[in-house]
Length: 214
Image (cartoon, rainbow, N blue to C red; front, side, top):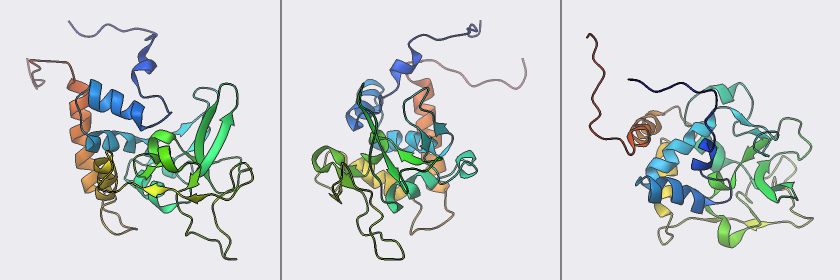
């Protein structure tokens, strides 16, 4: 007997991490599912696809530079995470909801990262509000960091080998595939394949491979 079909799956979304911080990522993937940070970072790499919509999640934008690139499954997510100047963006006051954006604030097709993305490489718990790349400037030498509540922000601290999430930052570097930019997706593909396998068989035992013939 196979799985029963259903038109809805109430409460299914509650099993996923909320967008608040890496504590939610750790709670779902590491503590509940027994995975490692390198697995969680690989699974979050799926954010390279699709977009957020304010009507459904409260967060609006793509993780990629444009909709076309948001249709390609590759390691670009990690490149976007480390190579752009991301700053906090308040998307709702009641209830309070915040994410990260880069580029003009009035962009009709904004780029975004969630707290659960940025915290994989930066310590936003102790250094926020901050900008992930204060060293990036435009052609006029002006910082690409947006201001937050009218204030220029300091550099977000990068996770180092003394931080509990050091394994996450190390995985981000690995999935970048070497010096950027490059087209090497192999480390990410292999890591995602393994992490997806772990996630989809989690809690299941005595699984057998499908047979080509009966």
